[in-house]
Image (cartoon, rainbow, N blue to C red):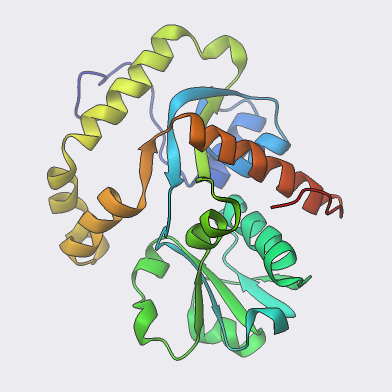
Length: 241
């Protein structure tokens, strides 16, 4: 959207997905990259074929616990990703039989663990950590979802009002996605130093952990997640993983 043939097609504003969702809800944006959980609350049309998913470990969504997962009663959460918080709630309940208290907290591991049994760390703060070196139990929530369901996990989708998602818009988004995927090395070279992350980590994250071009299996996983998240929201547990 900034560097490829799609330059100038859209007026761009850069926000985290949760804020994008709020802007869509308020009518301040036509299309946004939104937490997939938001689809349980807004009637939006998905831009097909693009989003943010994983087919195994995601690396950037870590539940770090001082106790076995079955003993977690209080979880400090970075609430910048609504989908990740919902996913933690679903997996704790269905995989470990736990209903925990969720406490919002800035993404700083040690202060989080001082007030809670475990911490949910998301995004760059999670990438800053080396899971194997931590003296705690570490759960990659992408891996746990895939292991539990056999399906991919979709964290975010491009979406907007139905009348806005025209075939021309869909084509532009899909082509922009491919343009970026074909230039991963340029992105690594630009983003690794800016985010103070090792280039090898950024390359592995973008090529081995994160999926941006979504297919039928991803949407099947999305459908199951939305069903699970909706039931968790209203306190029901009928869906079997």
